[in-house]
Structures are given as C-alpha cells and as structure tokens.
Length: 103
Image (tube, rainbow, N blue to C red; front, side):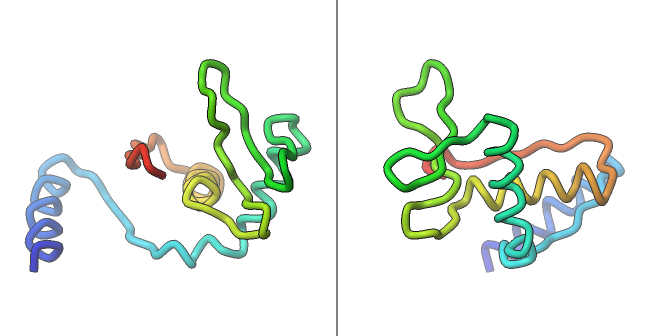
C-alpha cells in the first residue's frame, strides 16, 4: 500500500510539472547489458581486475564493478543500460538518475 500511495502522490506532482514517466522492470534491459560492458571496455573506460570488469574512478578506492567475476551483472550495469536506452532510443531530453550509494 505504501508503494501505491507513493505512486499516486508522485504522479500528481509529475502531472503538475508536465513530466512523463514510463516504468520498466530491470529485466527489460537484460539483453543490453553485455553490449554496454563491451562499449565500456572498447572505450578504455572499463578493465579487467581479478576476473571482474571494473571502472576505476579517480579519488575512489573501490572500483565500480560492472560485471562480476562469475559473469553476473549488477545494478550499475542495469542503470547504464537504462540510461543508454533512454538517451539513445527514446531520445530523452534530460534524465535525473537517483540511486542508493549501495548500488
């Protein structure tokens, strides 16, 4: 019930602001994940480290793991695939992406 109440209130605000949203589950992006990783590697942004594919960010001790050593993908990969899809295919004018630091 909390989620339903939140969606109702958020939608009222979105309507006032003229914001259009479309909700998709994470699985929608599954077929795009490996191509995002490939692009990161080809662009020299991601590299292999201890069997995982990682992005090392200056000033941060811990890398962003975009593909785990067991071949699985995490939230970061899904978030990047979603952003690529929304900017590339859906031609979004702008995007605000909010995630938990744990992701």
